[in-house]
Image (tube, rainbow, N blue to C red; front, side, top):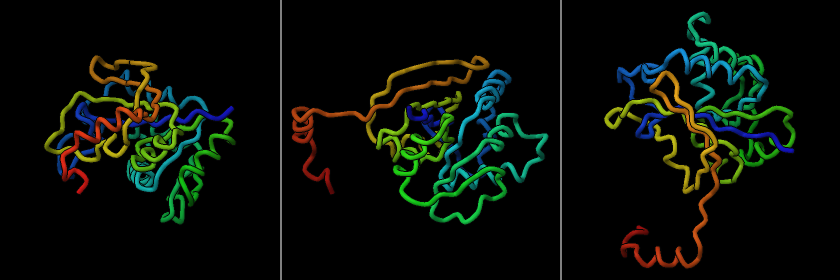
Length: 211
């Protein structure tokens, strides 16, 4: 049996995962509450292996190294204590992460092997480009997206699903925290377009659509 792979990502209502420098949102877009933080801590009570792309790993390592450990939320502390696989062709070290391994190579091949060999579930936070590729390859078993009650159309960056392709989603679980934040857990399946529908769609495209 292969290990379950969960892509865990935070988002605004309009789909952004971050915001421009200088925006005054703050962490969690300033919408965290005790229920959400307790739930996040509980997620990391059991053993699991983290999987990161290079950019997210650098950001996480910087956060962990720069803050007073007593100021970090408990789930952040537990995340850093978890074993981690970092898929990168540019990193040469683990940036002080206690139990991290940097692996270079094809992400799909690496995660396929991890799913076959790991005796604990796999979880990836953010790492957008990495997880878009893994979703396209059918390797993401759970898409767990936590939606915070803000719209950041002016300051939002990093659309969390902006490069993910087309997917059908089966809702597995829906939870609300602090009467404001919503966690949705889906099973993603690459959307298949039948030949007839694909042909009909292509005939409706404007003449210059492929330019």
